[in-house]
Length: 135
Length: 253
Image (tube, rainbow over all chains, first blue to last red; front, side, top):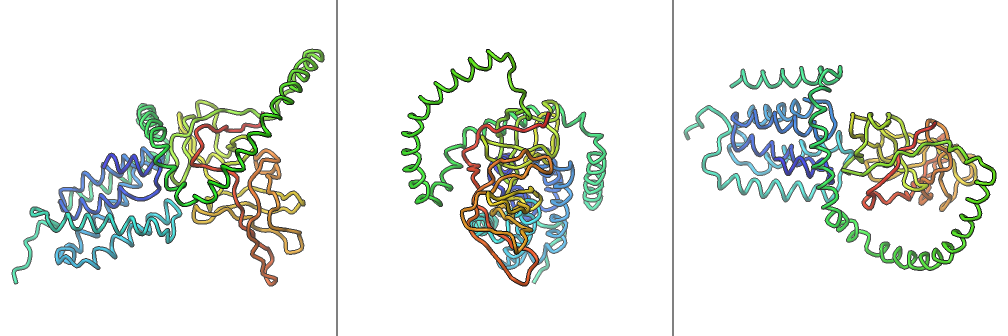
């Protein structure tokens, strides 16, 4: 996470921290809220933004993921990918004025697919405290 | 768990409010120096890595540029000899007159510590940097300061939509320079009747806190619609940002 913040604020205007935060929420569920909050604060400090702005955005994204956790649980690739693309796209457009940058679209795709691959092998991931539905 | 979430959201909102009212500066100040150190180190060490995509994407133009630089280098050596002679002559004349010419502008040197959407400099409010000051490299305009913390500042680049630089071409056509999607530089609000041609040199007009005659770039593409009030042109910027290590913040004295 520290490396992501440094890369994002020093030389590559791509929302690595947001992407990692989303993955952290998918992996750790509600336990990741503090991590997401601290990542947002650190990003604000590094990027000279209003302190708390990024943490608020990350928390709202985390809330959305947790709210629709069952859909994520079904491991629908397109659902997760479209969510990540929308979040990363809107964030990039607002904070970095990046709009349909082919390089960044590819980067988002590669990073999200590799992280999802990592997710699928993770045994202990949990999105919610609720028990999954028994079929 | 819901409690934690609402507590964190509330904390974020309180932090935003307190920071907006500048009550958190005492907390942020001690963190400035370590952040600058980390950013400066990473930015300096990653110079080659950062330049690689730029080199790959613009390989042809870079090799062409190298050839022209080589030619320029040779002519520069010849010019250097003439310049040295003229400099010596000028120095002796100044001494003779006893009046060193007062500069209209004060140049504050700064090191670049980061470049993503903005360019970040290692000098800030304490060094005399204020919002709105122009940032240059040689005679080329890079942008203007849009946020100054105590020890670092953030520069809005010409490719940014939030910048508006009053500019004038070498033919006298006036307009406003602004950016689009952090990628291109546009020369906008040009009257239809005003002459505008490809390869016209674009300079600052001297309004809105920008010193006059700073180079912005050359007109590379013109978009003209007869029905529109204004015409627009794309500008090929002279600023080669990936290569910048040191720049100057300009203050009008």
